[in-house]
Length: 207
DNA sequence: TATGCGATATTCT
DNA sequence: GAATATCGCATAG
Image 1: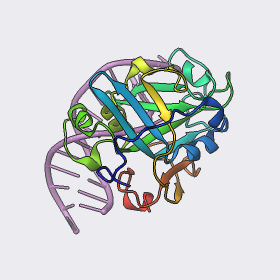
Image 2: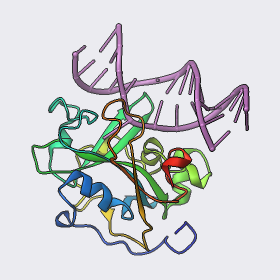
Image 3: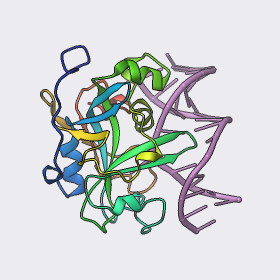
């Protein structure tokens, strides 16, 4: 399932909120193989979600752990909203929120396999290396033109940024520890499509 | 392929 | 003032 193999240009159905699992871990798994779509004036950008991480309620590695603050409030909106934040002085990261309203939790989108708008992604990223366009959470956000403006938006309502149904067939899902965190490092809360070259991380975390 | 390093800005302490 | 859910480049093996 790679760009150029017929995935681009297809009609994509919007996911309804009722289709999204409330549970954070279930949602992370559910999102693998689904699509993330951003409709821009210049055209559509879309990618197939191939890697994600769950940050469930009570997880000390999660941004909601210390309670609600102005910076993390959208994590508490309920499921199906975007939580976007800026880190390391260079990267935006996008989460799909989970659980019911008032509970802070979400799923970090770590990589997508580019489908539509590859030319636009190349411009946004400043590279034409297909494999690196949206491999890693910061690159994903840059490629899809996702920034702080999208923090808190509803991904299940009419709007330019939304979640779409699966396109094509999904391969087997692998599970591993999460990347780049310092707390709760042993929990197997990262999920990915196995052997997909658009998944980030070292080889052993892609097999 | 793997490991190491600096850059950078927002947020919370 | 410290920490950070990263990236890109450098160098070594």
